[in-house]
Image (tube, rainbow, N blue to C red; front, side, top):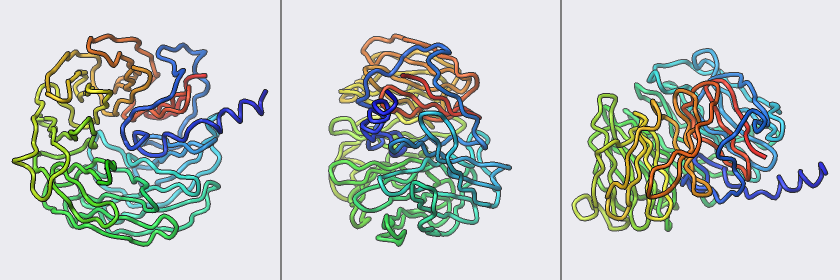
Length: 397
């Protein structure tokens, strides 16, 4: 029986290998995920040895998650047995503490993983170091990329694409996006970005039809060639800081900007073009209940927004028409995920709220987590992994 269970777990598709799962979409093809659960459906709870808002990533029987201790003076990567929640190994590194936004953490950047290695960025004001480990915890390489200047700290996550690890450093000083060789950590290309005060951005790129899509205050929604780093086009549609990541629906790519003082909005841009396409390719804006931090999730022609203020909204993506908009929580800072026609999103007050991905608003369940969360759920077959402020929780079958 145990061997059969292990084979089933190993046969599960490796979906959640980066922030927000498959290509950063937040959408899973998994079946059997619970929508409402009781204490008996909680398979395990693991106390984490540090704080952070990063999302776990998965390869076969292991979860990998980053944490920070002692006000950021120690950062670490953990490997956790996904069947039991037991920590298998920890790789800690001393770092200088630094200023950050009170709602950010010193471990907000999620790892990325493939069959050979797990990769993560350890970032402070003084150093930006990307490290690679094998699955047993041995460090394979470290690539220093300079310093990082931002009053709010760091938040983007690396992604894997065709033999390279793509890392963003949109900051308030010299900014760039870089591709590192997966085997050695050596730079393959480095693409400079505009920079200046308040230009730090926190979105994690995705790749669509051979283009690397990014969001930032400096370049708005833009596309680079992932093989060379050359910028292909940009739509300068933001006038504030960009925190969320790009999402593609049909022939449109969506991103958002905002500030602590408000004025948040979502921009939709037509894919393609060359050079500055701001005037020709901007489709529309959404200013009602627009998220600042959370990244939307989509299914078909429906885009689901979960705003920082706790309002969920369903938008017809092709036109921008709002189908419904309802308050469902006190607030959200983690991003939603979608599976089996349901949207899952963790609230700042400690509920996993599940609502229907449908044209009519319907809350399916409100599942208490015991404490708040600023993290994004991780899907693995019929299981859901949820990071709260101090714990990692496994729910499902």
